[in-house]
Length: 132
Image (tube, rainbow, N blue to C red; front, top):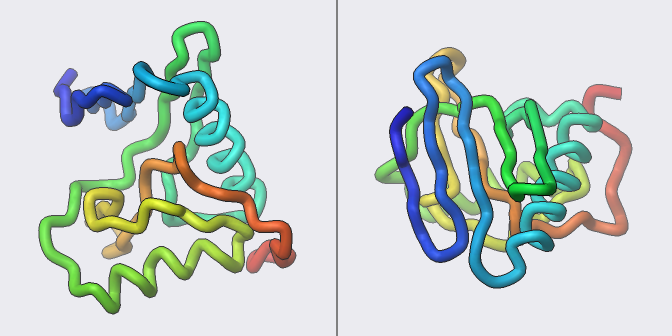
C-alpha cells in the first residue's frame, strides 16, 4: 500500500489492487465523511462515469474505499479545469474545491476525472441523469 496523501484532514492510501482508501480525521471528520459518501452515491446513481466508485464506507472509522480514477494531473489549463468541474453540474453536484489537485487522468479511456468530494454540494436544481 502506498500513502499518497497525509494532511490534517485526511490520509489516503493507494492499494496495489487499484483501490483508494481515504481515512478522515481532524475538524468535522464525520461530517466530511458523510458528505463525500452522499455525493459519491448520488453521482453513481446518476451514471456519472468520471468520478470514483464508492466500494465501501465505514462510519465507525470514518473511512471510505473507492475505485482508482487514475494518476494525479500535474498540468491542466484553467479553462479546461473549469470545464471539467462544470461537467458535474448536470449531475446535480457542485464540487466547491475546483483545484487541479482534485483532477486525475484515467489512461484506460483517456478521461480526466474528478476526486475528493468531502466539501461538494448537492444542487437543488439537479436534472435527470444524462444516461436516462
